[in-house]
Length: 250
Image (cartoon, rainbow, N blue to C red; front, side, top):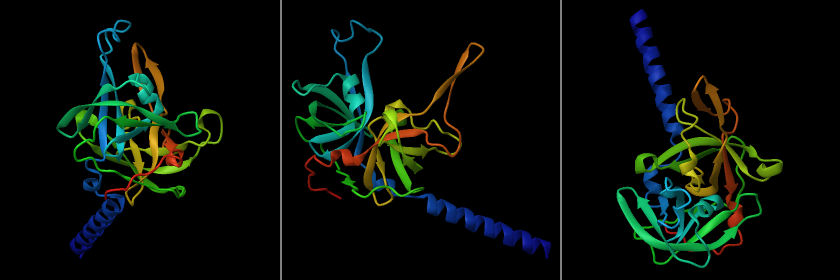
């Protein structure tokens, strides 16, 4: 009898675990292929004179159309992109890497951090545009964002916590994103990445992370916020409301 109970409990726990895993799967990652890319601006020798150790700046962008990418404003500022001059931008999509000349088409939004629309001199092959969601997020709604650890697209899930209410956070979308026990899975290289709802629509763009540096003797440790608190700051996608939207290829 005890053996039957143990087997029944094991089956129950296995079923519950399977259900939790199924519920945790917000979106099929295959839907996001070729939609989000790692972008890097390599600095010229002249640009590196002030900081020889800085070879370039890396961030994340996603395709609004085959000839336009969206990222966070501070990414394009660090890359020294401009509205006038075309500068080579390395676009990495999985194992594929290509250089396409780029410039800032426009900045959009009223928040402290704006969204930057990058114009590409020619279309990126296989670029997959993502639909945009106009409706606001609901409390505790599940979302997914994308990172590029080791150059590989990696989706990470989380939840919407609240809108920022004052100062630099006013109107910003505050999220709690983690993978297992790792609350630092989103790093500064993820800046510009899309935040996507479970229907595959962009709702925000990653801007910053909440971290704190703690010294332990001579060692510095970076820690995140407490569990249940937001740890990722993102720009609401409504910043693009006044930007013409292309036909979306799904």
